[in-house]
Length: 198
Ligand SMILES: [Zn+2]
Image (cartoon, rainbow, N blue to C red; front, side, top):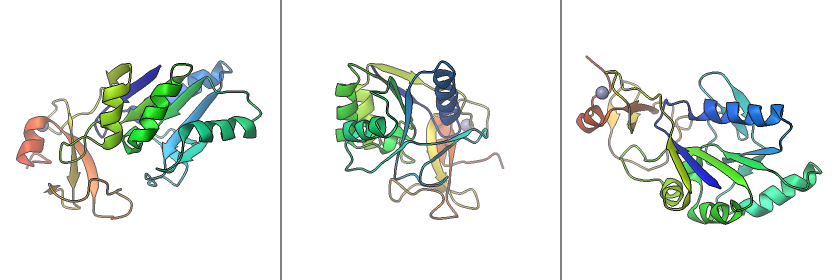
């Protein structure tokens, strides 16, 4: 089955993914960790959660990669006949084709995709839109809070001074441009462009 666990910036998506992986490993189950190549914040193959957990992704997926081929290659490398579980971090960066491929593969495999639903302008990422269309099991990862204490639902791009940025490229990883960060806000404060109390 293809699962999509979406959550806003600052929810505990990656921590939850890494705990899930740990639990499978403790049981001796074969689990593959995938991340799209576009996210290089914590090193090319590092999956990192702000809570301090981290792991190395077995597959760093380029946009043109076939998920099926990459997994077969990994299975051969590790002398496994097959993987039982696949976990994908930052799944909003998957291509539509990759999500379609995963939906087809998930008839015989449990695939869990964790990622953002929308970008800083409130638009879908292509990967998230495809997951919302095709995943058979969709859940929200809770925990993201706005500075006002309400539930955060909107991803917000801010500059070094905390000013909300409303325009620009959909993908700007915070490490490439040091003065850009992302936070989660409630809908009202995202709409007002108010990133803090003052
Ligand atoms: Zn708020």
